[in-house]
Length: 344
Image (cartoon, rainbow, N blue to C red; front, side, top):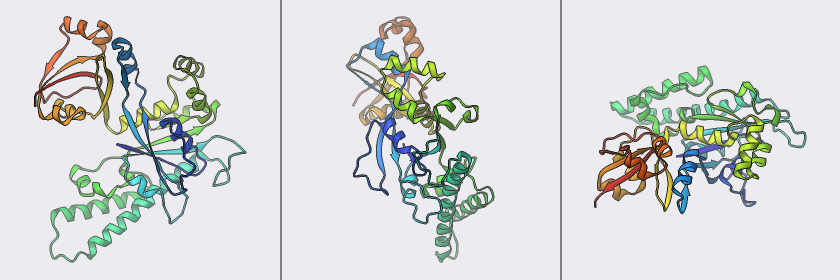
């Protein structure tokens, strides 16, 4: 799963990328190039299990991030487009901070204007994609079209009608058979969309940002947080009236918007979070660790995170009879601690 960081120039997306991935932007990066990195998802459950198990290593779940080239409003050369199409989720970084030293491409800071302009860019890109695809279908000289071809054409027309009318991303998913017909085209307006509002420090808790897909983030605050030790970070966030940093909230929201969740493996060697899609059966979850475990799956021993914390150790959970054996069709739940039994 990959997340695209998009936005106009001087919006702060490069700073966000560096803070999320702990990777500096190389001086050699060209204007129209993309840059990949990994953002680890801070997980209090992993931290607690590390305290209990005292492993040699700890590994968090992660998001793959792609820093895309700047979006230039109205430009026919959309260098960001190919990069964005290959991603699973779009994160639009929008400037809302005031700083005379940092120019804005439009000449002034206007959050609503910029959000509307960014939405228009992805809508127009998809409308062009639809026209290209429909023209290609029209040139295919076939006396009778297959059901699949007809479904694709109907779906493209359905999407075009909505986009031309609303000029906004599609609010709902298509029917399964419709989505299957166009899923490989990389429609931007069908991807989950999050907004990262790079705002001033004093506006970080503003009520206007209180929506499910909008996250206020202050680059200045995030830089200060990143320079502190873990215990100091908690105290600083409390002073600001925040439960966790804006970037941590954004990272976790992206994970959830992609329909992902974590299960865990624990022991003296390693405590680790593994990423799977929601509603994944045990046998497929086993394959996330190794294909041999999936192929030779026998059963899985499940412990619940809350039971481990309450009991204080794996042995205590088992002694209380709270370790459960499940078969291959068991649906892994978020937070399950798994020990897979297999034979190859």
